[in-house]
Length: 612
Image 1 (cartoon, rainbow, N blue to C red):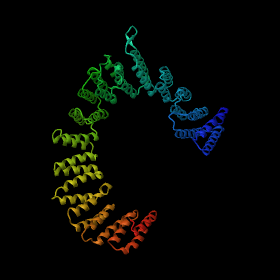
Image 2: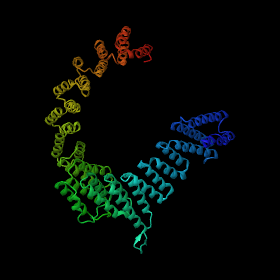
Image 3: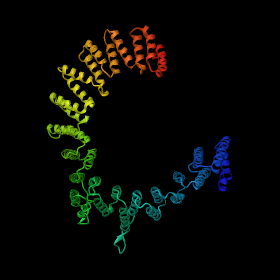
Image 4: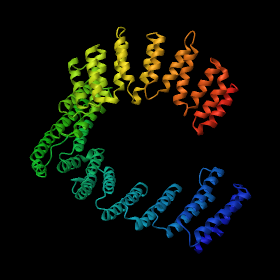
């Protein structure tokens, strides 16, 4: 405590003198700084202190340091800034001596040390931190990575990882980071044959150590993600061919029917990393013996056999060759692993391949089309991929129309609740102008979709609107759809009204239709607004009919909408009877919800003065 008192008292006097001499702060600001420091020093000194008191103190000092830096505007830290940073470091140290169990406080301290350039103190701080928080694997990883990146002390890095793995022998991240660092270190070693009678290079010795790290890890780890990570890392280094084969062999041995690893293997083919023959001739038997059912064993043997018989590994291939190898791998996988997940990997890979059509466009499109066709035939096509396949068939006109119709019918049969797939089928028949099939597909869709069939009604209406001799059928469809009560259908009433007024050009019939639609439930505000607009477009507007639209709107929606009352008032002022304004104003106040009345009165005053 005496040390802390000294720090907060005498050692700060030169800072204040420097600040005053350099005119970095006014005398009043300096007095405020002293006051705040004394207050926070007192809080962190008393027995009832908390870690938050230290956090507050550090925040104040950090803010002050930032202010001083801005005012000095120097290229590097001044003597004052270094002193203030040192003050903050001491507050951290004292705080951590009281609260070493606070992990977040340790992490903030290390972040501060890195930011202020105290890199030489970070390793020691990590070591102290590990005494209290060694139960957390990521702390070991952070310590080792910093040691490697900043101190470049590989012996200390290995020491940290060895100690960390003793406490956390099955931690994936720690095993992987150790593997990755040691592999990178190996990549920098000499490849000259200078060791053991010129039979080995430094790099080959280093690679043997990496293989030992990997072998130790696989004894503890059963998570496939670890193997995926280390395999992806080895791909960055051309000298790891043997290690890659070892990892691949282990993956096939431990996860022979896992969809993800065969997806990884296929993607490797696309990148140019072909399989090499497995070293062990009895590999198939070893792998198959670990599976329970005969079908699983047969499938595994088939896949491993395919992998072993692939083209020699690591050959230079053209893009087309790589695509072909990739597709072959996927086809073998989906043939033996009959799951939706495996097919999705295959289809998504082909789809991704088609995102760039700057090269091998036709070949890529062909592979996507054949994959989709195969998935359809195997009954593993998702709704999403049916949608995509139908678009592809339409765009490329692959095969006769009969095949497209077959695909669309199969799609809606398998996914009868899919609005998008029914749209494809019905729209196709409208384009072909086959009224019989349009009606048939629409009825089937409506039976399956029920209240979700609004988009299909829209397609049907648009089709018949292009035919001048189909007024009766249009009226029939509109009468049917206007009776629907789901929200998606309500705007059809407005469409029917506009169609009658603008296409049939019979305004008396439009008014009659409006009166009928007004009786339907639920009420639709836009119906009344649209009819009011249509009434306003007449050469000699019928004021009574026009007013009726506003009456209907206010009766049905006047409780919750200020705007419809303002519209009604504007109508009476400009076209109707201005004497009704006061009466309408009182009606509105009585009708509106209480919380809306004040705003309405305010808007009415603006309305009266002509501001709105």
